[in-house]
Image (cartoon, rainbow, N blue to C red; front, side, top):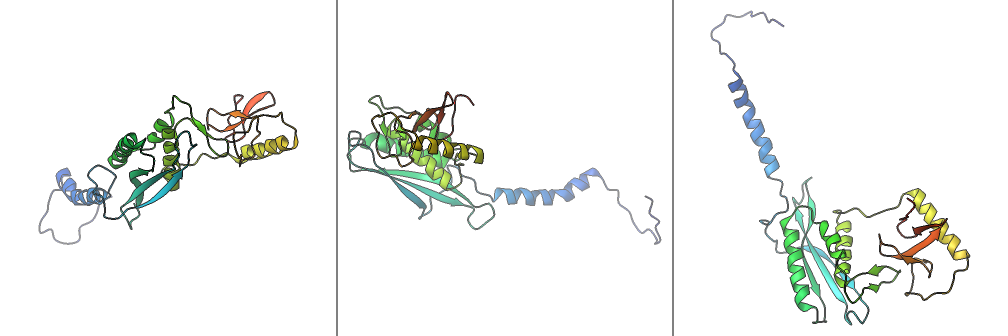
Length: 239
């Protein structure tokens, strides 16, 4: 739209694309500076004098270890007090009176801590540790959950911790699956089941003749409507 000039022209200047870019440069530089102030997890992040963390107790059968393991995972707070505040795992320590596993436990904690400090997506550690199987065989935990090895249980502890700090999401069933599982558990509790050896105190009330679920490693798979279904995670071969 043309503009009428009412005053006398005393000077002029031709605006070029170069001048426009120079005018926009300071704003862009400020924006880049703001983004650079956001601290992400990487190897150069220095350890503060104090870290917050959690300690988890792992009790295994006596044939695996007579003494409990205590797993401590410490977290670092990045961008504390800002809208970009994040809590990320920084280091892990494993303590036990059992000196039999001392060497590989020290090596494992150093490797896991190095992965934590490197930053990025560290959730892959859970599946990597869970895939380790003891050639002598695993063991059952209370509730009928099977652990293929002591290393796998360390991975299970790390998963619980990552879920607690919001780095992983806890697997949950939808409302329909929850109602179905509750109904089937009630059905099994009212119907007689064949005698079989119990694996221990089953706090989840799964049938004693249930089989092991390959997905959640819990002894909770039963046949429902001619289809093997897990009463713990809802996994079914029939979809």
